[in-house]
Image 1 (cartoon, chains in turn yellow, green):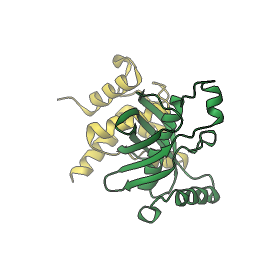
Image 2: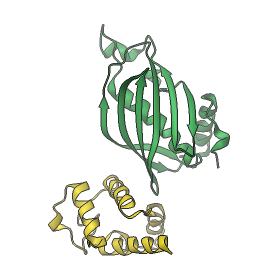
Image 3: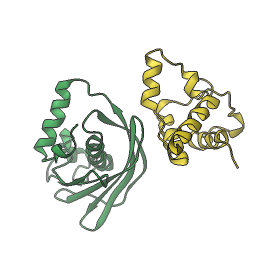
Image 4: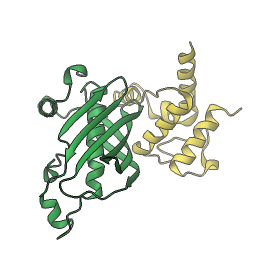
Length: 93
Length: 156
């Protein structure tokens, strides 16, 4: 059974044509993988579909812009996957 | 339809919120400055304007389901296919449906027909941005009224 990280990494590799082996849990989607905001929409679409959730991108962006959160909290992949797991758990609750 | 002003739609046929579906109609004008260049002596509607027709149709649908709270701007076009030629005087019917409602973005599928003939289709991605001003929001609402958009069903 593949982990959340495996699924997300596969989505990123396929969506952005990034070699799968270069994507690690510590990769920052923006700073390390150079994924821009438009490509991230495609990734968000694929993640939403794959996990049956809705990534709260607007809320995250607002928190980052307001200084209440850092990009690392949402866009380092291990943290992104933790957020996804939380959303999945909340859905099932 | 006034191509040179990017007024691509003549009227809304139906807007169904529950089904996330919209249908518009438009008639290609007999004359337009666009046809002077595309092409001299052979007026053919540019494919990019067919994509714009779908983008506007689906854009209104995105506006509708988000309650006219922001402006959907076109951010991506995928799998665009122009299947048939469009000439002055032709009637176009455009349908749009929502593929996905994300946070701050939406993905729609558009398709144009003329009669039973498939003309074009594409998947369209929109970012939702705040209206640049209250005046602009009013402009959009006024425009919707002029096109007989069923505003009362959607506006928050």
